Length: 102
Image (cartoon, rainbow, N blue to C red):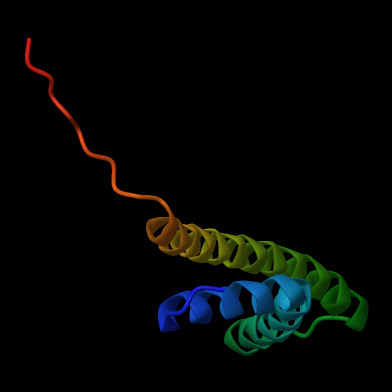
């Protein structure tokens, strides 16, 4: 629509992340949750039952997923605001203050 590398790059980021946001968040949450549980098990030398591990993994995964979703939403809001400003600056003329003599 408008020429410019920065505007096109931001538009691509926002479009791609909007399309794949939930899948990226779930994948990152699953990997992060598993890594966190492994670190906890190794650090505290805990021998948990499989049921406890599954329940704890679900809780940790949900919390990590929520944090990732909030982070992605914040990044998208920043990018969308920047993109809107780039497009607006090209289409809206600069306002000038005119003082009138009495």
